[in-house]
Length: 144
Image 1: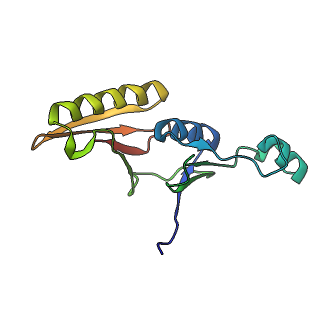
Image 2: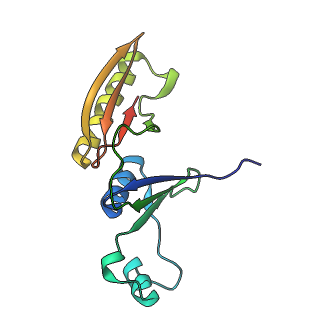
Image 3: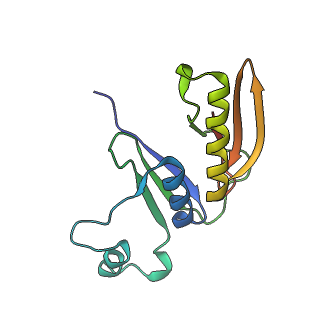
């Protein structure tokens, strides 16, 4: 049996990052614990100070297939390029023609820009294309 994993983002605004990645990946914000209508209700009941309510957040695959993605606030952002990135496979795979994959990638890039991403660079190589993008906090990811 495979080991389950969780992907963790260090960030300055977990709530904003969770909202972006939930929309980008068609995930959803993780539901609050059973018996609570919201995370705020849970945190209030646990005595967590309101100033700490945005210290973490998480998103999950609504179908339960993909990994949980966890966002944790870090007091000081790490400098430099992230060494790990997410690829969003929007092109339709090898069953699609290069032209169809290009249209799918362009449509996904446009959708992600509306969500708050920034297009950094577009690459074309050997009939393939992908776009390097930045999430709202500047983490690189690719759409292919």
